[in-house]
Structure formats: C-alpha cells, structure tokens
Image 1 (tube, rainbow, N blue to C red):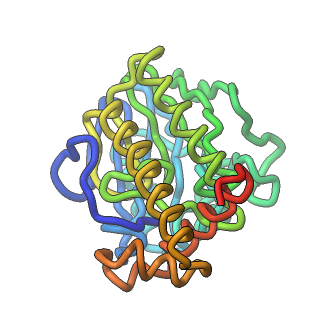
Image 2 (cartoon, one colour):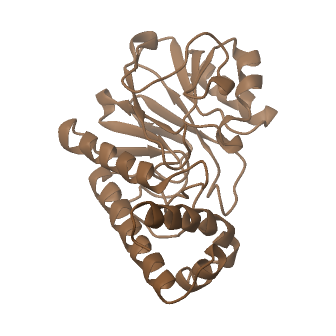
Length: 276
C-alpha cells in the first residue's frame, strides 16, 4: 500500500516477475492498483538444490495466481513445504487458506487468526525449511502484525509492506502506529549495518539494490511529513482531512484516503509526544 511516488534506494527496473536473488523468485499477482503498484509480489524462496520451497505472501484469492505459484515451484523441481505471511492485509494473505488446501503446507503468521497449523511466528524465530535460513524480524507500524524476513545468504530482507520498491508505505491507522513504524525502520537499518543486508525484496514494486539508502530515505521522508503535519496543525488545520489537503496537495487525489490513514497516525504520534 503506497502513499507517494518517489523512488528510494535505486530500484532495479520495473515490476519483478522472476529470479530476484539466488534464493528468491517472484511471481507477480495480477492485482495492480494505485495501492498495490504493479501487484503483490509473491515470493518463492528456497535453498539452491533443495526440493522444498517456502512461499511468502501467496497474495489475493485468485485461483489462477495461486496455481501459477505452485506450478512455478514445481518447474523448479520443488514442492511448497511452508507458507509465511508478512501481515494480514487481503492483497497478501486472502489467498493463504486456499493455497494451503492446494499445497498441504501449513501457514505461519504472527496473527493467530491467520495461522493454519500449530506454529506461529515471533521475533528471532529462524526458519530452516529445506536447508534455507530465514530469520523473522518484527516490523510493526504499517500494521500491528507486520513481519519482515531476513535472508542472510542473499544479503537480503523481504519487507512486505514495511518498505516498498517504489513510493512509501501507509501507516494504516488505527492498527498501524507511527512510533512502531519508526522503530521498525531503525531495526531494518540495523540489519544493513550489523548484518550486511544490501537488498530489499519488497511486497510491491521492484527490488531495491541499495537497502541502506532506501531505509534512510524512508526515515527522512517520515521526518519530513511529520514536520509538515505539525506545521499544518499549528496553522489551524485540525482535522485529518484538512491536513491531507494541505500537506499532500502534490499527491494524486486517488491516494488521499491512504494518506489520511498515515496523517491520523501522525496526529496520534504528535499528541502522544506532547508536540501539539
């Protein structure tokens, strides 16, 4: 879900639909929109030579797409052994139950309501299906249940909607909280510093080959927007809709409803921190 059209972190070309790193392959869902960019990136992740794959975010409830994901894994000589969800928004997770029926794979997520199987996901969990190593990173803010997945062997992180390949993401108030989101961006920045992550494999849009640059851009963008919202309030723009019209005047009006969610989150943040 995007609320702007800037280009952080050196995007690699256009929409992804194919091999994005040695262990990650993208199957693009056919659900393009102003909020989903080119569509949802469904990720097939597997260790080279393994006959088992992990699928991250099977996407919308689109039978043809779900079957295409399975067929793509099978062409690679793999079966889907596990399904993971970055968060519960329908463009990422609505197809998960049907995908589980088609593959027989359990679905693991932070939110218990989205799980199909006995195991959930939590910060610090390590997934080792088929010799693959994925590390779970809590990244709330876009939503309360948002997760990212660190793929150390490819120096990459799969970010769902926390960092996009094009534009900036929505802090989906009231479930999403700006303070949490800023903390999550700092956690991702730590991965680039401490663990050598260089590449973002996002939930929408192209691969970003400059993860540090993308995350710094996101932090700077949020600081700029927050300052703009604070100034707008000081100038007498009291409602979220008024602030959007003032601060997001240069953004396509079709994105204003999404921008209003982020503004509500920013207004809450300003109040909580005694800034307005």
